[in-house]
Image (cartoon, rainbow, N blue to C red; front, side):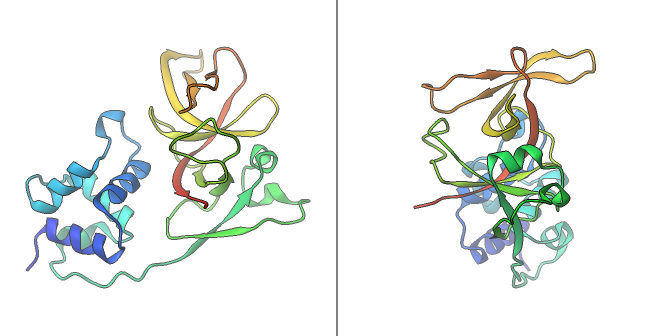
Length: 218
């Protein structure tokens, strides 16, 4: 018999990821408020049994581990994870600006499909980081998996379309006010303070998706 915490640890170790990496995966999946942000201590407490995750947390952890919630919650036997590989297109900023689904790229010469173990929506895509505005966390050339089906929440990293219809990648911050249609006003914040903040109050910006994964380049 295994405890829930022991199962979380066992499945995590099967994937050869650290507690910090599991927390980052959970952060990418969790679309609740910023108050629910995940960190390494939270995973450690769950694994040690110092805290018990609620049903929502179990669902998020299971998605991050690639297993069913009921298996993590109730199956005392730890199964071998059969890691599936998914593939998503790598888009240029111009292609991402036109993207709504796979048919959006008709007329382009083609695009590279990037393998991933992350389960994202079928219309997800990779975007390559250009420039140094997101240093030190994101390096120029890194790839980020963008899921258009996830709604942005404060603190998430998002891809957005600027006035030139090109994609840009920044951190999402709500301003506390809304448009007459009820859409939040927001800022797109670079992690590098040497670059300007973009505001939906001052220019046309449209969020096209939320980051789910980063692939570092050497």
